[in-house]
Image (cartoon, rainbow, N blue to C red):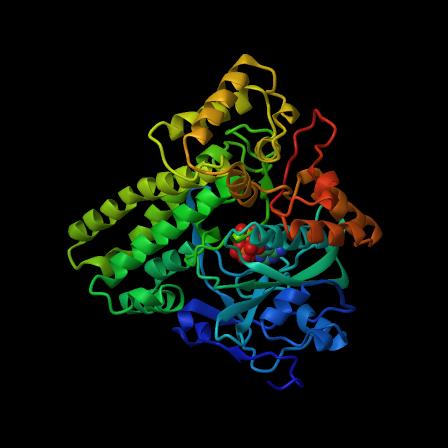
Length: 487
Ligand SMILES: Nc1ncnc2c1ncn2[C@@H]1O[C@H](COP(=O)(O)OP(=O)(O)OP(=O)(O)O)[C@@H](O)[C@H]1O
Ligand SMILES: [Mg+2]
């Protein structure tokens, strides 16, 4: 590998799709960029030269001021259903540089988010502000460490320019790394405005990139749909099991690869309440915690509609085939969920009544406003007295049933403990910790708290003493936590 180009090794396969799918878009130059976060481990994994990237030359790349060799900057076209309504979108504030081919041959999109106007910006300024970009970095990296499929964050630079929102805020650019940025919305765009041939090219591209095992399968497109359904079901179960609330599950924010994308208004649930919503604009609670699985299926139905012409020449037949697979979503989802919840309770095997046992705990948690993460944490470290449910008749009864259930499997206490430790995070990006870190960074230019938080969140299942302070709950507040679609 040559080192004079920082290790960049670009290909631009997306840009070889028909022109309809993208527009050329150069990142806008910024005045005095400064790297404030840099993900060395990820850079190394990508085959990049971490020393060079930490010089001004690296900062210039992350800011969009210089293009790395081989980059072909584009904005991707996509549409999407936002809160149920179809609309044309596209990268309005992001520029894809190309695909880094890693030393192991894997292909990763490299995208700058907040890098200026593109042909899809409509009335927007194409910019991003520091707080939301740091937030995306912190939470996406935390999700990765939790073992949940997600796009990742390579760097955040401040631009030295201010961005006008309700007030003036520091501008920033995030370098995002993803398996791809193909969205359900990309297919909706193709189905609405492309030819059938273009739609087929997009589908073939997605299959080749994310589901190569099914290439040449006789029912290729149907199998493709089923595989995407499975991955989405799995992803949403992953979210539910750690209390992650995405907050803006529009079809343009759902990837074909099954990775989490768009960390705008997301947040982790604290008190267990299935109706939890954090996003200030989600007034109807469309994307509440308990609605995520159903919305996942709704989004997949929109995806299925785009694929119909590829499934069968007779539309009615195609619809029936798609419906059948869509119907399997709930089974996939339920199976993954039950398997995941069993692990959270240390259950290595299966019994008929497990679902009742699990639901029993969730009901008591809800009744007593128990913190989602810390309840499972307390059970994992064998300190049930740490939960607010402790001492109640319902919990005492439940706890005894759980102990009896555990004793019916032939596993040692240690085996149970290890399984629970692997399945219940000790630390999550708690809202008050994230806010505190962002405030110090944005108001004072102090990134110490952010860096520490990222470090602690990088091993959520470690259960170290160092993590202890990060497991504490904030003082109760009468103002519910709210998030904003970060622009
Ligand atoms: N400041 C802005 N200027 C121009 N377009 C914008 C701006 N902010 C958001 N958009 C566009 O509005 C649409 C919806 O925004 P949304 O918040 O879902 O996405 P995002 O956070 O910008 O990007 P992504 O989904 O790639 O993480 C997208 O097409 C996005 O590019
Ligand atoms: Mg988005």
